[in-house]
Length: 149
Length: 149
DNA sequence: CCAAAATAGTTGTATGTTCAACTAATGGAG
DNA sequence: CTCCATTAGTTGAACATACAACTATTTTGG
Image (tube, rainbow over all chains, first blue to last red; front, side, top):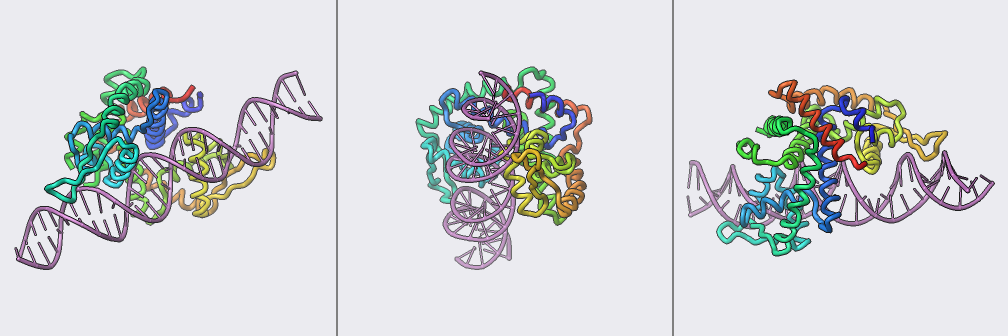
């Protein structure tokens, strides 16, 4: 589709970021689906930190995923419904719920790693390393610009 | 919050794009709200092209906004509910609906321009022009990489 | 020690996105 | 000219996000 190619440089940043974001999430789901996996990009982005931080609280996930606590609650609900994780109340602090991967969760996580790699390659195809570095730095800067003090 | 600053360079592109996208839409709504305006970033991103292409069809909006036709349907529904636009069936092609700004829509569009500018400034603060150019080029490249052929 | 503030998480509502399936109108090939 | 493919748009379900208001714990400060 040449639509985009011809419009590219008239588009403002907001539209570009928004489109790139949507297309990336879509492509990840498509790639996962083709491999017989049922997982969204956001579920993946939460599942990773759940595995990395053993017994993470939702607060920790919220910080490490840069997602709202509300989003975490709802994504964890979805993951729980799919039997990928379980919620366990912390013994010391009853407010805290710790999220633990089930066997199925660990399995899916492993299966999804090549999907993520494939998607990453597709996303970054033909973009030079230095440009990707600048790109990531700009994104980081934007995020810190927009953080509410 | 140093969370982000310290994590920045461990974060992958997906997480960065996703967070930047979410924070930008959030900030725009906040800025609009502070100015007494009730409009989301996505509504803005559709309202602009509605004004630019006089009597645009939803198909045209879909292409120019890089949004799915379903999204356009639903955003136009919202705009119509707010009396910012009206839908008019095309006389020649009965399938086509043309979207027209109401007076209130034109007014809101004008009022929102400074909000958009303010948000853009906040987003890009402290980022050099050349880096922004590279940033936009990378986004464009990602979008064309991900377009389904 | 106790009241008030802070923290962790949930819920409901509104918005936006995708997909698949659908209606309705148009256009083209035989 | 008629059937079939295409095109424009809608609908409903599933998912994600933000916000505000809420519950329930824990901490802190007087």
